[in-house]
Length: 179
Image 1 (cartoon, helix red, strand yellow):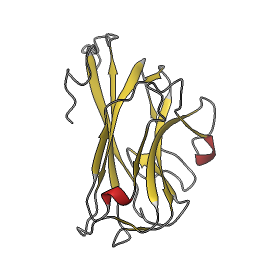
Image 2 (cartoon, one colour):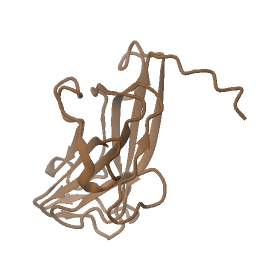
Image 3 (cartoon, rainbow, N blue to C red):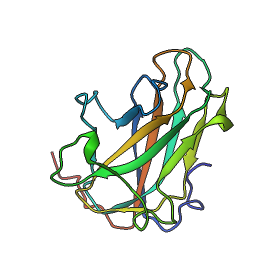
């Protein structure tokens, strides 16, 4: 469903952060990948986006980007995408990741998308536009994907694109005078 004023009413502006979950989706149970907006972080590092203003995460979309046209096959596994944050002052590494959960995520959800057998033999794209996660300026936003069981991707270069939509009623200061 496209993001429209009917889906997301009462916001004065929206913006989108795009990136991807690195290659090697299908690496095995317990494999964790982090949302990347630029180059790969250090092996234990986590890419973060520091939020410069108060806003809300209102939607998240994930799209399978397999380069060889092989569809996903969930033999016995699932792939879960989670939004979260790194606490201020903590190192940007996997042990510092905290998923959003109630009461920060309203309605009562954990800001996740999950793929399993229901998307077998497809190139899935899934969007959630029911998120309402409040973020304060300075929040270190990040996302992770976690595999369980066996996922067959047909090659070792399977990737997933991700879009995270932010919205707010708070006016953003005029930055046109900056050089």
